[in-house]
Amino acid sequence: MKMGSINANSVHLKGSSIVLLVANLQDSINYYEAIGFIAENIGGHIHMNHGAVTFILHEAKHISDVRPNSSVEGGLYFDVFCYTNPVELKLLFETFQSKGVEIVNGPHWSEGWSEVTIRDNNGYCIAFGAS
Image 1: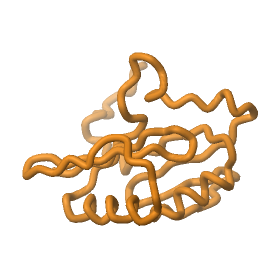
Image 2: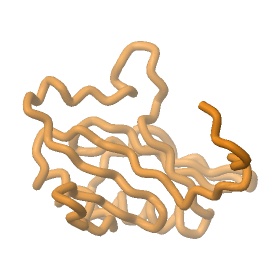
Image 3: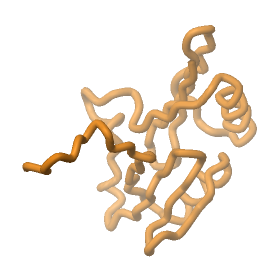
Image 4: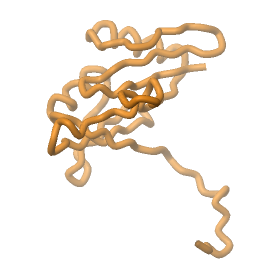
């Protein structure tokens, strides 16, 4: 597609959102609010925001349709990766521990890279990393 003289390298995206297909919308809202996300209804869609990270929750018509990529053979160990700084990562980890969140990988702490991965109430593995 020809776009004239527009240079795609000069475009600055503000962020992105990922849609998570969930089994029960209210249960998922409650889960994410408990770990620090803020729910916002935008145009009939529930956005769960935490800083620059936004998950758009969409309730599945059939629970069997909720299939995180991490649960599929050959899938990565995470469905979403969120970046932060080392101080915030430790605070997040403390929140996860205090809320009884399932930790599936880590925490791994080091000078160069630290990471922890949780599994949410729908089976999505959310990795948080910091350098």
